[in-house]
Amino acid sequence: MPHTITRAVVIGSGTMGGGIAAHFANAGIPVYLLDITKDVVKASFDRMKKNKPAAFHTARTADLVTIGSLDKNEAWIAEGDWIIEAIVENIDAKRELVAKIDRLRKKGSIVSSNTSGLPIASISSEASEDFKKHFIGTHFFNPPRYMKLLEVIPTPDTDPGVINFVREFAESRLGKSVVLCKDTPNFIANRLASVGGATLVDFALANDYTIEETDSIAGPLIGRPKTAAFRLQDLVGLDIASAVASNLHGLIPDDETRDILASPRVEALRKSQTDKNRLGDKTAQGFYKKGGKEILSVDLKTGEYRARLEPSIPSIAEGLKIKSLPERLKFVLAQDDKAGAMARHVVYNALGYASRRVPEISDDLPSIDRAVRWGFSHDFGPFETWDILGVAETVEAMEKNGASVAPWVKEMLTAGNTSFYRDGRVYSPVSKSYEPLPHDAREIDVKTLPVVQENKSASLRDMGDGVLLLEFHSKMNTLDADIRALLNESIDELERGDWKALVIGNQGADFCVGANLKNAGSGFSPTGPAEAGPSEKNVGSGFSPTGPAEAGPYIRAAEDAVKATQDALMKVRFAAKPVVTAPFARTLGGGA
Image (cartoon, rainbow, N blue to C red; front, side, top):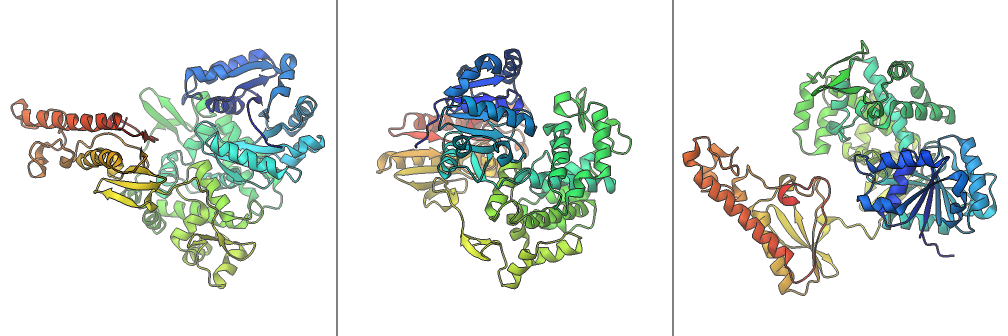
């Protein structure tokens, strides 16, 4: 029977449950949010409306959420087309709630248990047949509005039609990127991240790294987010991170790497922090803490806060100058210093562990890569990283560094297959051959679209179906004279041809950070590049280093550039055919 979601019910109003309810509301779906008592829900709901970053698109969106209590409003469960339980991570409590939902739900409604790693089939083991057919596990990442990944975990009893519907609905309506997972402890992303995080922190403690050194090495330098290791713990909450590690350790007795989760060094550090109520952002103190106008860090030797210490490892700054991540990663891994040692330990052990979890946590490599990229904002997943570094060379380097490699990887190399991905196909450790790479027809890679016009800062491309795309590709997608020129040309092309519409968007790190004031070519230089040098830092501000008397030309240049940009944007606004912008990330100044 076809499914529709006209009403959702979320049970559990904590950080995750409240965030999930808000995200359904953001998608225009009315939600009942329930908890033990209405006072509990109201307190959580009021906090959620003040969350930063905001959980709701607008204040009015929150009106789609109706709060209630399980004791007085349990009948609401029967109205839900999708019922999500998001209570405490306790399997007995979840089973008890499942029994209540099974009794009250309408036949055919979808039910999911939101958990970061509890066994899904075990939660529904005593439920009715219809319940089991419509039951799945979900793992929304926090905060649900902003995190891309949604892990969906079917059980052997889940109807395939339900799996397909949930995936389609989550991707098209909730804006998620879905990875289907096996029902194994902590699924994919958290399984790899829990072991990887413990491996990193244990190495830092064993080798006298500071918090600042660790986060500087294990962040953007090696293709990971700025939260790196210790900042991530503060963000997640040390109590939650500790509980996840402890639970996982007990659930994976056959995992050869599980003892790192119970590292005495790591556990001693966690206990020291927990005893002092340093749980992270939730207690306003963790491994980092605001001290007046500066940020303090914990000294890992004394356990006390001190002023931040910038790392004195030259290769960190040198590496960050290398724009290409593949080249930067190769550079760091080759360094004979603390940065190189930590990078080798972290990267090589992450690759080895991912290979050893196949096919336990997943049969296909793209699911693992996508879970890591979408769930933890790594630039590349483990197998994509391995390809970048060269599989055979990296296997040799890994083994020299003490990181073990799964036998199937060596079998792949012996058979003459030198990469995991090639020519739009991916190696399958199950079939031991290359198979077509899963592709979503809704996804568009901008760089593959035909070019209609272009210059050094922008390209006008053909998206198909009569739609044009104006792509920025200047440094940080800053606005300059070339972008302004192609913006004008794009509207002319749109209106004179058989085109139906224009999209302004790109796949950069930021949509557009505003005007490029340092670039003479942006139009802010009064006489051109040859005479712009002395005042390069000040163009656009109306001031020059030689004083107000010579400021006039710069003021006029700035005014001319602003006027030209405004004219171009007005041309967009009053275009005869639809123009749609697709902003994301930093959208500043003229970009806004």
